[in-house]
Amino acid sequence: MAFINNDNILTLLGQEIAPGEKATINFNLAKLYTTSSVEIPVIIERAKEPGPVILITSGIHGDEINGVEIVRQIIAKKINKPKKGTVICIPVLNIFGFLDMKRAFPDGRDLNRVFPGNPRGSLASRFAYQFVKKILPVADFCLDFHTGGASRFNVAQIRIDPDDTLATEYARIFNAPFTLQSKIIPKSYRATCSRKGIPILLYEGGKSKVSDKKIARIGVEGAMRVLNHLEMLNPKLSIPSTDIPSVLIRNTRWMRAKYSGLIHVKVSCGEYIEKGSHIATITDPYGKFKHPVKATHAGYVINVNEASLVYQGDAIFNISIDKSNKSGQNESEEEI
Image (cartoon, rainbow, N blue to C red; front, side):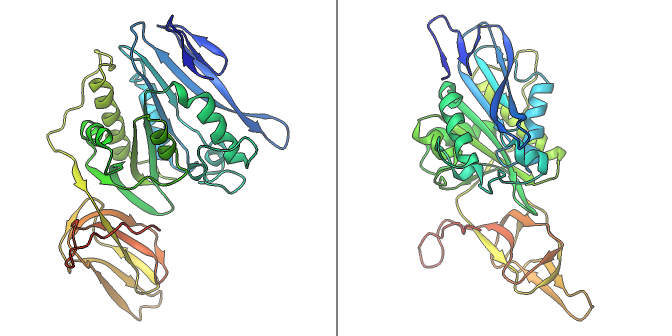
């Protein structure tokens, strides 16, 4: 179990870390077929002055490189050395997926759909259980970094539950270009934190298997603003400033391809488009047809499918919509 006693000694995975100390502890995940142990480095930095414990994670999906790069930079730039309190960084949670550049665990499970886990379940479920029991209890606040799946590029965004006022406030402090209201997915890491009363911010940006400098910079700077708000940021570091407030997105709608073929995207993620705008073209390989894709409604482009080829029905754009449609009813975000 992880806990801090009355002497402010942090005990994590059986090791004690006193105020002002640092440590890297290997979290034993499983064994390979060869019986070699698979271990995840847990990097801990403690200030002498007591304060909150911040848990920073990425790589729940093994192919999401941007999140790993963000946490790597937080460590490399010594942002994780707090003025007070404790910062725990885990750059790669799904080490199996990271090695193979795959989203899921070797058992085919999505780690972010099996929380809080089961000690007698699948490999992914067993890992989630051990993480929730042995690491998560010590956290006062969590930052979790993600990337768009497959070929879909996500605009830099913080995702929050619309009913969570505390997360809304922290999202304002993080100040990503966009803040997207989205209901918590059952059995996700975010759902487990919510049930345990641990505030969490989920950052999304870029696409899998690609490292994007801008997406990484936004993530690192947002984390610094949160640490500064908690009075944990090392005074030697400059606080990233921004004059542009985050755009709040309450709802989105997916556009799907009406034809199969090669897709040629003409807009960028984060761009505001008008209804009827020519946002892409779908062609066949033989030069026989060219079909324009026009925006079905006005809004911000939140996600772009950057695949070169699409099938009819594939999700190609996710665009923000006004909270109320013409009938006066709310439209929910379509899951893909």
